[in-house]
Length: 130
Image 1 (tube, rainbow, N blue to C red):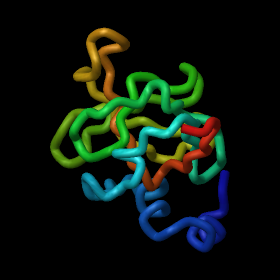
Image 2 (image 1 turned 90 degrees about the vertical axis):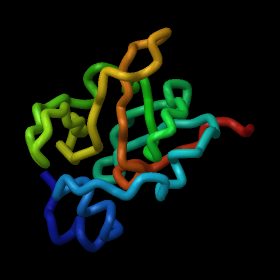
Image 3 (image 1 turned 120 degrees about the vertical axis):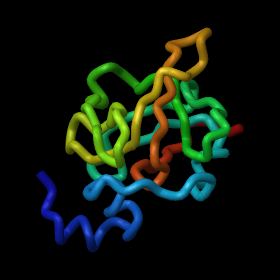
């Protein structure tokens, strides 16, 4: 587990609030929502691989959206009944950082899922030139 004070010093205020306090960044504020370069998205807290650009799609919701994680073990799904709603929270399997939520309204030609992820919980590693 990560020391909370060290995380506060290392992460941006928004990244800390999202990953450690289950906050949600405002829609259309993450550079990753409209980021289409080839690469991999990793956890901003522990650097674990989470998503790949090949699974990213434009959901029009204002957050980076993916139809699947890099592998089934990369994330955990947890029941979330906060804010008067019933949703499925997505957390990093390695460090349990809050990432966002998963919804059953993704592309039907792939998984049918939309992993709606806070960009503040991610870091992007470009893998090829575009």
